[in-house]
Amino acid sequence: MVVSLIRRAKNTVRLLLVVRLRSFKAVLPFVDGRKGLEIGGPSAVFEDAVRPLPIYSRVGSLDNCDFSRNTTWASHEEAYSFSPGKAPGKNIFRDASNLSSVASQSYDFILSSHNLEHFANPVKALQEWKRVTRPGGGLILVLPDYSKTFDHRRTPTTVDHMFEDFERDTQEDDLTHLPEILDKHDISMDPGLGSTEEFHRRSLDNFHNRCLHHHVFDETNSRELLTRCGMEVLAVEAALPCHIFLLARIP
Image (cartoon, rainbow, N blue to C red):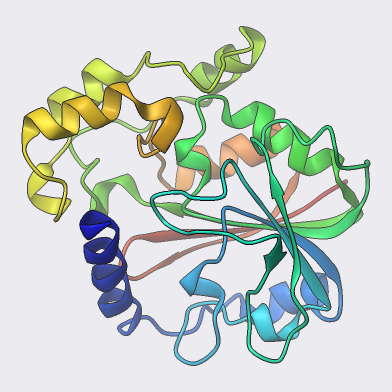
C-alpha cells in the first residue's frame, strides 16, 4: 500500500508538468462519442485538466479490463468509474491477452497506458485488442520510454524477440527476463521499492502482482511492433516525463 501511494504521488507531480499532445486532435475522431475498452485503467494521462491526452470526457462509453479486482495500482468494483459526469462502464476481470469473453469487433477503440510492458507476451495481447476492435477503430497506446525510467540500463527489446514469445505461446508466469531486470533495474529511480532483497522477492511473485517490465520500449521498436501486428501507425510522439504515445488504426 505504501509503495502504491508513493508511486501515485510521484506520478501526479510529474503529470503536472505535462502539456497536451500535438496529436490530440488526431485522436478525437477515434474516441468522440464512441465505445471503448481500456486496459489496466484508470489512467491519469487521459483525465481532464492539464494532462497530455484528456479524452475521458470525450468518450461515449468506456469499459475496463484488469487481471484482478485489486492490483498494485487500483482496486475495482463491478462498475468502472473513469470520469465525473460520465456513466460508469463495466470491469472485466481477466488477462487482457485472453479476451475470450468479449465478442470480436465489440469496441470502437482501445486505450492502454503504461501497461503493455507488463505483458510477457505483448504480441498476443495486441492481437486480442485488435480482434475486439471494429475495423477502422483506433488503438491509443502509451508506453514508458525506457531511457527515462528505471529501465535505462537495459536495451530496447527487439520486435523479433516479442514475436518469438508469441510463437512459443509464452504465458504470463514467464520470468525469462528476470535475471536482466534484477541486474539492471535502477532502484534509485523507483522510490518506495524497498531493498534489493524485497525487490527480488516481489519479482519472483510477478504472476500475482504483474509489476515487472518484461520488455522495454523506445519510439523505434514500439512503432515497428504495431506495424508488424498489422496496424497503421498514425502518430508517435514523446511527452514528459517518460511517455511514448502512439495512435494506430485497426484495419
